Image 1 (cartoon, rainbow, N blue to C red):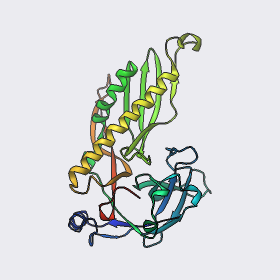
Image 2 (cartoon, rainbow, N blue to C red; image 1 turned 45 degrees about the vertical axis):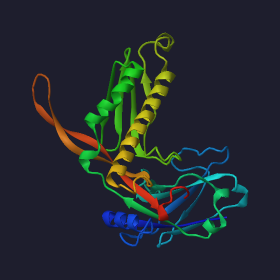
Image 3 (cartoon, helix red, strand yellow; image 1 turned 90 degrees about the horizontal axis):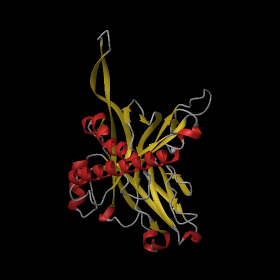
Image 4 (cartoon, rainbow, N blue to C red; image 1 turned 60 degrees about the vertical axis):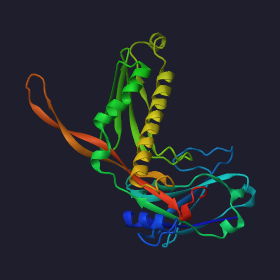
Length: 314
């Protein structure tokens, strides 16, 4: 069984959309070969569920050639399993330890709808599926501002019955500090593009290690504060935040690209942390003023569409 495709990059969005709509999904202009790209074919092995990890654990991987062409040979034993194609943008980051090779960073460009391998017909196996990907840059003022983040986190504070909850957008992450009954809770929230098989989930906001510092002996404060419950609710709250942000991004794409947005697979190929303003604070006693940067998280999206208005297969 073969899964074969070719990746194209959209070079002019308006021209491409007009051609795509006019030709019933067989565009003739506004695009070019994407070139060498890392492609993963995730599976739902071994238990019928996709792993949900950033890089699918049970998967095949290959680099497309300079023309964006790729092909996977799938064993017939996997006919009853499901698959999902994910194309990644690759960048390299210096290793924190001197002398070690750089670290490869993968960000999703395109995610297919999950499909069962047995549903891929012989004719489809012989067809090169064309995938068109447009990497868009979101205006800085349309990102997730500090003000919007504060409003979004308000329900989490209420649900957890926290005394306070403060999130600060930094240059590469979001620092979160909460207090409850004299205890401190601190963690970093990381924002990235989702690789979930649920295409409605576009962006992930996930907490790193959560540090809970409770006052007094644990045997006493444990009766008042359940650390495990707090951590579980924090993660569920961030999951709801991810869903809300994903919905906003999907709505924006459908509004911007009528006739194409409903067919598009949406991914976040880059998250930027940019300064979008300043805030003046004054020190007590001296009244000395300082300008503090106000940051925003700006998710840049990639939209992918298949040839011939198809949205049912890879």
